[in-house]
Image 1 (tube, rainbow, N blue to C red):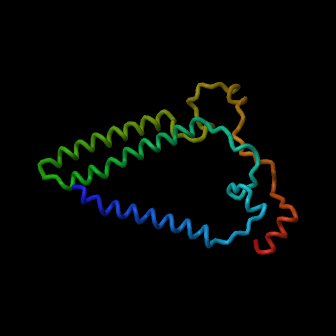
Image 2: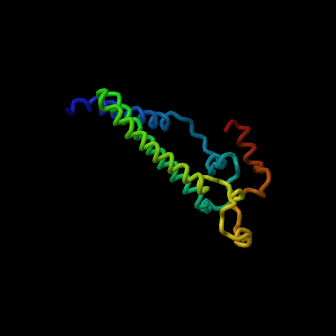
Length: 166
């Protein structure tokens, strides 16, 4: 019984060895030319301005949770398909009906979320909100800290370091 897990354990062991070896070789053989600019945080090509503790709207977390829920539910389709393929012909209609009910419940849940507007990312199109315009007007927009910063100006020392092959 446990002998069937030996190939999986060997594969996991080899994967751990290869990953560790790659990281170790990169640390030992990789070039090290640290500069002040290379040590700064990198945020998608923008200068890091402002706090990293910005608040996200609740809608962001709701959509993330819905994605995880539906994603996990879809993962259940694979073991069902393996079981469905290995069963006899008399049992297959029952298993198919069982999965049809499961997918139907998922689809009804998806339609419910769609109807409630839970998957609408933009609040400006939300006509069902009960909040008044006054409440919405006071809410500050999400800021990333660099909207008004304009183009990034590097100091002269950084330009010289870049030209020296850094």
